Image 1 (cartoon, one colour):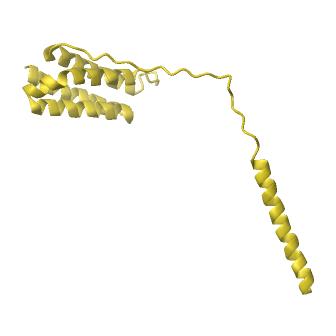
Image 2: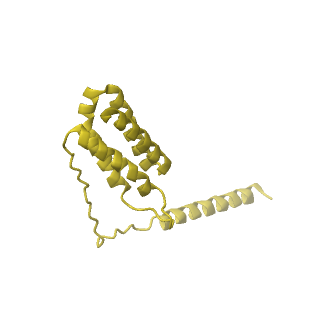
Length: 148
């Protein structure tokens, strides 16, 4: 094979590669269309911070924490009940309302209950009903001891 035909073969090969590359770029750059007929509605969740004395708020907190796991795990039919985020929001609101007074009564109890509220949050985020049960059990024990 001569040097000239070797150069021609290389040039042809390079031209083919370039043509395929350009074709891919132009075919891959099809115009983008956006669907404008669909509308989305954003609904903001609102949580009212409960008020009242600790001896009313903490039993409500315990009871709400006891229901949380039923919203996380599947029920007997295999489906999961919706509403775990709302239950968690209520737990956090109840704790927010009681935390200052509990801290003044017993900083250790406040720290323990706060950790259990954090565990309830983790249970919802990681979809772990056993963590929700554990949080309810230990928070309930601390609440019973505090309110004794």
